[in-house]
Length: 476
Image (cartoon, rainbow, N blue to C red; front, side, top):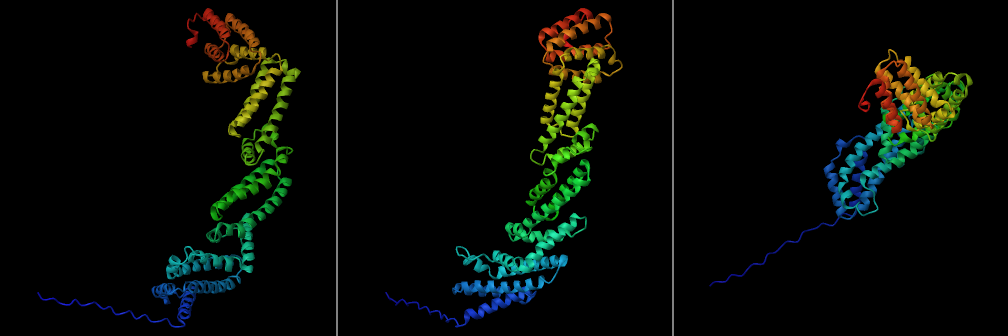
């Protein structure tokens, strides 16, 4: 057997050239120049790939701090140039220039992020350094938005533009929206500190002055219309160009200055306040007052209190008027009329608010029982209607009227007194044959049966059985 000697493999060592003494300096100048070109609109002259490779190499050679420093330095320099340029403009041109430069900055930042992507991935996490995109936004905030001349001019221009729109002038809402978006992109706190806070302060002053002027020259209805218009305008303004979180804040300003501050005066305004609206059946104005006052603390409580007081005064006068009490049928008819009037207001203007309805019910219960003759008067009212008042009236209308009267019956504390009178009046109607409507009599019996004692309605059924020869009244 022939044995051969195994050869040992030999690997040539890699010749790693030492870095030039000014390696980092040269690469940093290259990166700095590239950033300047990008911000000068010459991105087409920049080789993003080669620059990216340079960043990778520098980071791997442990020059990450130098790379980050040149990035901050170059972007800061160019943004300071932009600030000097932008501050020379005024009014709408200032906003247009600011927005234009902002959009250019975002485009440039996208390219810069690509170049420095490896730095972002390899060195930023876990360090005290800010990621490249966030750095770009922060540098814009610090060098543009917080630049003294621009900061003041931006605030004043935005507020003046809003003021012009409130005066009825047409503004560029798209441009305003772009500026607000820029502030929001820099962070909600930037939007709040640089604009929203000043916007709310200026709005408070504006609506405080306007409300004082309007309250002196407008009647209540006109004032509420103007207030509603302002509220709608502010909501629309938010939807068009402000941040959505501003809506509740600005509407609170309008509500405080235009409603809450003056609501007592508005409700009691001579010749046009709440009571006058009720007396004149101004359902639209009442609905507007309800809607607007519902936005402020205790607004509806105030309306309800004034309305309740008015109803009490009206009802008290009715149930204590000697002349009115001489006419039992007219007395009940007036009660029903007043109740219908205010129920219509509650339904049409106050969105069927249960608190208002409960207050109304409580008042009419007091009115009915304030007059000790009410049980007899209600029975007399029904007797008059069933003798002749319902002649020619549709069955539907009859049921509606009877339902209304039954509500008054429910309010009675002395229902047994009513039962005595009603039985007496029913017997007389049937004996004399003067009942105008068999349907009405039977319908009323069913309704009474639903809310009365069994003994009372049993007695009534007996009367019907005797005079109508009906064997199963309960089935009707």
